[in-house]
Image (tube, rainbow, N blue to C red; front, side, top):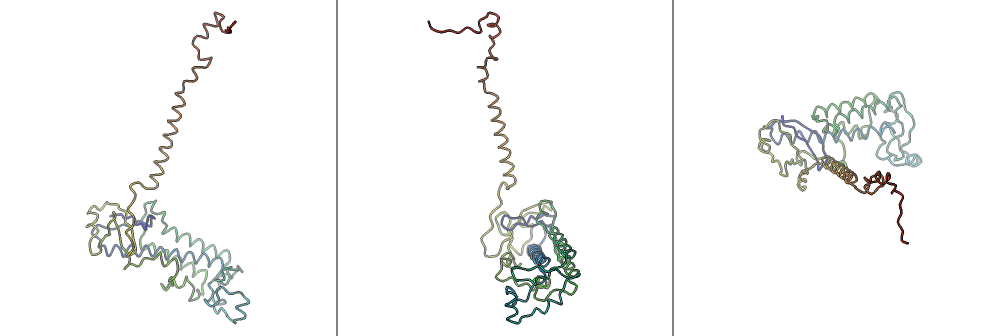
Length: 290
C-alpha cells in the first residue's frame, strides 16, 4: 500500500493508505471526506464544550440580549423547558448571551468532556507522528460517538437551531465564519506532489510510479489559489537536531582549546629546576642593583 502524508500548507493533517492504481478522482474524494470530516468533528467538539459549560443555544432573536430586554420584548425560549439535561441542571451564566445558562450537572458534563477528548484523539494530527492512518470509518465513528453522548445527556434532544444539531443533520451554516475558510469542497480541492498538481482523470501510478511501498507527501489546496510551497529539503525537526549537534560540537572544541592552554607552565610548581635550586639554597635569592 502507498502511504500518503497529507498536508495543508506546511501543517500535517493525516496519513492515508491507497494503491498506485487508484484513480485520482477517487483519491481526492477520499482525502476530501477525511479532511472536511475532521473539521466537522472539531466544530462539534467546540460547540459541545460550550454546551457542557452553559447549556443549550438560545433562539437567534434572543442571543446577546439582557434579561430586561428579553422581558421588554416579550420573548420566550420554547425549548428551555423541553431540552433539559439528564439529572437536571445548574445555573451557569453565559456572558456572551448565546446560551441559556442551564448547564448539565458535573456527572453529565464529565460524559460530554470525556467523549469530546476521545473523538479528538481518534482523528488527532498526532497520529501522523505515530505513523497511524486515518480512515473515513474513523471519522464516522467519532461523529457517532459524539451523537451518542448528546443522546445520553439530552435524551429529549437539542433545539433544531442548535449548531450541534445542524452539524449532525449536515445543515450547518458556516457562511461568513472562519470555519467556512477552512473547508475545501471536493470539487474545489486540488492535490499536489513534488511541486506539481496531480491531475484528475489519471492514476496515482502516473505520478509516483508503481512501487506499492512508497511513502510520499502530498499537499491539498483550494482551486484558484497559488501552488503550495515545496517541501523543505531539511525538516524543521531535523534542522533543530543539526543546530543542537553543531552547538555541542562548538562547546567541545572550546573545551579542547582551554585544555591546550600552556600558561600553567609559568607557575612555580611547573618549574623543572625548582628542586635543584632548593638543594643549592638558591630559591630565595633576589637581585637588586647597588
